[in-house]
Length: 425
Image 1 (cartoon, one colour):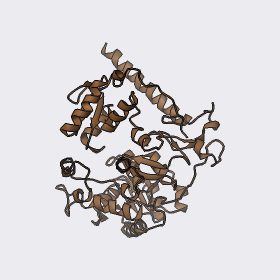
Image 2: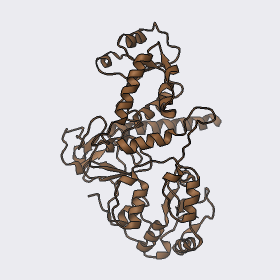
Image 3: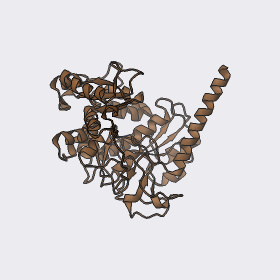
Image 4: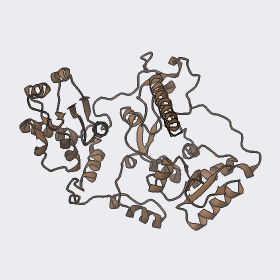
């Protein structure tokens, strides 16, 4: 169990929301008046409009990826629903906004991903180190934020199958949901058309195609694909290409020479920068091992324009090899497996980096932050740390290596800012 801390409520109920400068968004007039009254009665201040003066954005009938919610998180505002106000008012103190809903349902909220203890990972975006690790752990169920909200409304655990989808929706969805007073079914509002965009770069059927593929098979667009990258990546840049391939369940074996050890296994494509001469040593090695050579746009158009010819992005007359690799890729992604969440290999438990044991998973921390954008995903028991911890921390946890990197970046950023100020003086 997570550490439980006893916090005393304010003796004076009128101080419950001291320091809370709020703005209410998405409420109907009756509910808005009730929520505002509670906040003002307990010391809150109505900022009226969204801006620098408000520190809490309290929403109703808005989804988490609504532009308002996205802006609030980006600007560092505390984003909560009316339930947070009710719960805080009842207990006489501001409760943790992140754990409010799960606590109300009798569940435990955990920021660190604790092996063999976390049962559900609630994702805003289905990507990141923490998400990728959870996908490989059969015991952790992946759901979007609506699962939690709907469970609270129904007051029961709902099946997770309907909450593993990530939709690209028309703006009409928000308008219709607001008018209906509830979140509507997404499918009628899915963003898709049977045509290309004006510039011809994207087939508007692509988002639906890949969503349905993931829903049917559990596979991403690059499931099982193994590639190497040679030369400079400009459009898209290397970091973007890495994220896209990983999100699509593909693997980048290497981004620079030497590639010799990979020739003994399978390489589906070599992504080579345009203009690389055929006589180049590594190009000759790729050709000798019959590795199809393509530019990065081959992968871009494969995702953005499914069904369209990719031949113009193939280099050095390796079209026959590229065709074979593409056919193999399509066959892999269309294959339905028993456990679609574990494309390459499954791991029921994470091994501790220090002692190597997979036991006592409820005391093992996984390196990473809440949204999975930082951290390496390594696992370490709390008693294997130096110094050891007595309990699982309530905040995000990073391994010593990642902590050092984060501290170095922070110090570097601070030094640059000080240097900039000195120059201005």
